Length: 65
Image 1 (cartoon, one colour):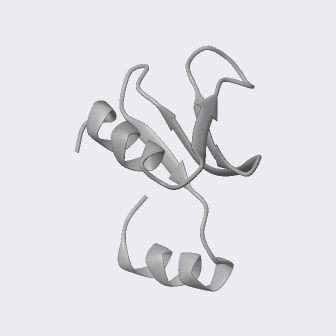
Image 2 (cartoon, rainbow, N blue to C red):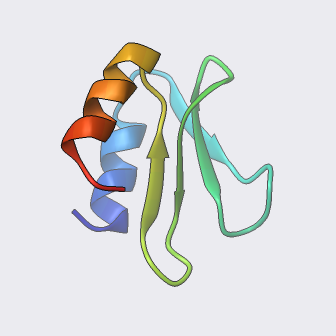
């Protein structure tokens, strides 16, 4: 997926919005003022997603960062 496809997917979530609270490069996605994703496309597409901490441990064991 590219930046535009991921952006469209994240914004398709009910009530999703985005803003730039840190700088002009890092887009922060929120639902009900709660951050659920960060994404930037400066030099390389980078995304950070929030999830359940226990699920995050499993994902880290399966995939390289």
